[in-house]
Amino acid sequence: MSETFLIAVDASPASEKALDYVARLTANLAGAEYHLVHVVSAADPARLAVGAPADEPHAEERRLLESLRERLVAGGVASERVDLGLLSHEPETSLVDGLIDLARERDCTTLVVGRNSLTWLREKLHHHPADELVKRATGHTVWIVE
Image 1: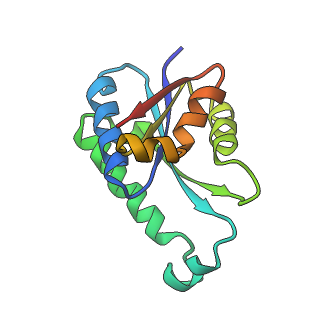
Image 2: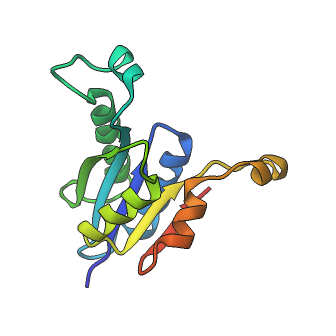
């Protein structure tokens, strides 16, 4: 069985660091597949005002995904092994549930997320979805890259 990675990304430096790490460790892994996914809110009225024209929804996220694919390719991953996608997140559902469901749907063996380091006090007061992902992604390997 080959490795299949689901990598949740956004425009943060933590996502870039996670991609660099994944490329460095897996670029020579035979048959590995990569699914880059950007989470978009299904009900974000502000997104309509700031985002792409109505005939091209989520154009900004798609450009980001393309640039992040290029980052993986620059790290040695073959472009044809990288799939891009958007995960529509409903506010009333868990982001973690959406990622786990997508990982199961795509037969992903490893989930990867970047997380910014926090000071010890902020760490005590802040909950990151990565923490919940580690607890709930039964049957998957989870990489949290800081």
